[in-house]
Amino acid sequence: MNLASAIQFGQVVDAAYAVPSDDLANRAGQFVQVGTGAAAASYEVVTSIYANDLATQMNPLRAQSIVSIGLVLQASKAGDAVIALRGTEGIMEWVQDARFLAVPCPFLPGAGNTEDGFTAMYNSLAISTASGSPSVIKALGTLAWRRPVTSLTVCGHSLGGALAVDLAAHAPPPFNTPEVYTYASPRTGDPTFASTYDHLVPNTSRIANRMDLVPNLPTPPLYEHVLGLFELNPIELGLPPKVLVKMTLPCEHALNTYLYLLSRAAGGNVIPLDASCVP
Image (cartoon, rainbow, N blue to C red):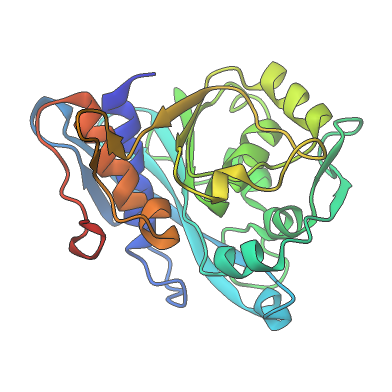
């Protein structure tokens, strides 16, 4: 895995988090700056992405709420396209509900089962809040790209990682050879789905903090991860070992923690850890 690219696309996902989930203004035309020095890159937002939020037993009305969930972008001076998907506050409720019901994968016939809450949210992904707005997948070929698209990267954190897996597996030509980076993604589907995905989207980096609970759910054998694991360790080995991140679920799961650990692994400038997560 290319650590510099993993950090860069994680920062693009962070830009999606910078848009409050209840702010439904389309960010088209705005610019996102990521990286520094030779790794610096600029992306222009082509459109925002919206979805019905993740319903849970604790908050079943959440699925009736449209939220801003991501961005479609294109490199400022190239044809590289990026789809970045953020997580949702509902992921913590989902972890607590822990029902993990499976439904037949609706977009890849014969590809096994996917988790029902993730699937429902994926099916709602759209490029507008208007009723009947085209899905992200159907809109890819008609978006106002600034230049012909030469590559596609799909990236997402937490629930956004699961949505990124669904989207990458479903992408139509000429977008069907994407590079994928997920951070803290839960398992998306059963072993049949994971095997189908691995065949369709081999260029995947699934980044997981070994102390983060969310990537361990839902559990096998009904669910299985896709390939491409790159594991992060928030404990520095030594005598004695050094804890790098406060050992709480929010801290171990946060995208900022992943960027901090990735930048430590890459060497050079380290992205600061959120002050509330410093042990």
